[in-house]
Image 1 (cartoon, rainbow, N blue to C red):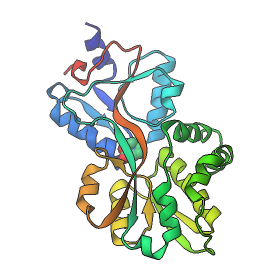
Image 2 (cartoon, rainbow, N blue to C red; image 1 turned 135 degrees about the horizontal axis):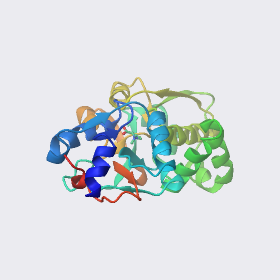
Image 3 (cartoon, helix red, strand yellow; image 1 turned 180 degrees about the vertical axis):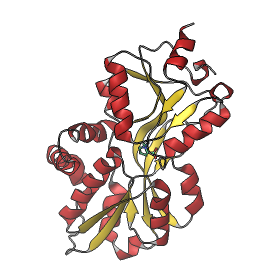
Length: 267
Ligand code: PBE
């Protein structure tokens, strides 16, 4: 039975990322919910370590089970598939939301308008993430802005210039959010803002916007990935809706692996 080999070969281990990630929380939940995963381990480390392990396994056509997500360039670099998740632990299609602190609309109507208008596609975000492999992600974001003037203009058109007012954008420490937040930073700078970026773990992001320490975030993954953190502070911030749809999280394997579902992993 090849699936036994696969599970043995990966040492009954899911290669995860940073412990603070929403996807890590979901993976811990998966280990509880799926009886076949009872003896499995969730090895948390970092996104870089996960990508290195994925690259090594892929080069040798060896099995590996990772905590994975979309948008991410790994799907362009490798042939990968999400394992079916019949228990629904990882949720379905996700969106990325924009949230702002209470009172931002009154205090900074120009920034509020830009944040309210900001939206783009999976491909946009992935192209910056991919370019960010070779250069600073801030530079990759600037290049994307230069090549996508029409989109950026549609967010800032008619917005009155401000004279160096400070605004703080809170983000989580992944390339997807470095990409989006840098693009929004550039758009806000074009309007005249002085923009500060503050990377924090997901729960702290909601806390920062709820307390007003931070002004806005374009980084919440909803409804599942950050849903618990969101609920904890719901009503204490303003939700401006989705800025990207078609996101996803789950357990991911190379397509050369002969399994389709989380339930195919052997106890
Ligand atoms: N991620 C990328 C993050 C959010 C963005 C899916 C790794 C997480 O909290 O799981």
